[in-house]
Length: 263
Image (cartoon, rainbow, N blue to C red; front, side, top):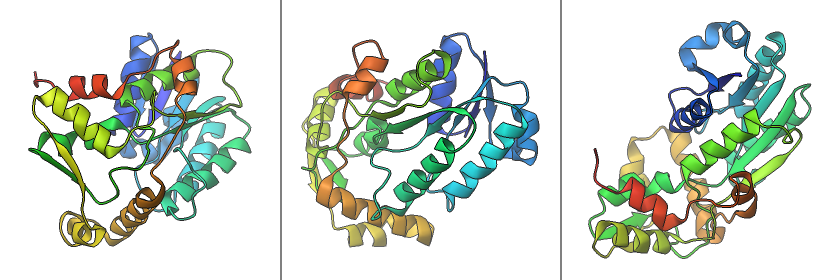
């Protein structure tokens, strides 16, 4: 089976491509350079995994363009990578994914929508440089369904290659709800020394690390952090566990792998 993976240079696309190849699928990675003739690039593919760039300024327009190319190339199988809690008006980039889901559902394709929670891996770079203190610009005691990127990639490969998933929408959370404080504790175990999680003022983040970002992206992140500060981002873990045959990766196991010796 030949599968096109859009967003070819991103971490999610790379992980999905690796999971597909491990199951002997033929993978066509599609980056931005190939968008001049997207339908031509997709021609001959049996399925496509659609991953929009992070904080795309108009994800529904991006997805509409992809859907038109998919239809022109006569690709019938499509998996759209959305997000946990897509309909959250307080987070504009989530809402863009909710609108994109609607476009996917009204397309003529045999579609599946995946709604993964935030990846554990999103915190790894900060943990490597944290010393004994992990700082985030939102509350460290709110619940998250943090998920292993490699689990999401493997689930995506299975949904693309196996029967029985057409028309499904799957929320993908980790095996248990965790907090950033839990992440710090588990990272401390992996690294052999205590790490404390601490909330920093979002305004201080915006004036410091966030000041180098594009204004639109910084504003989007601040909106997301405010939402996290209030509610976290809980997501259920049973669906992912079932898709993977009965087990998804616990937080401590993910961090032990990601924070272990490089090379």
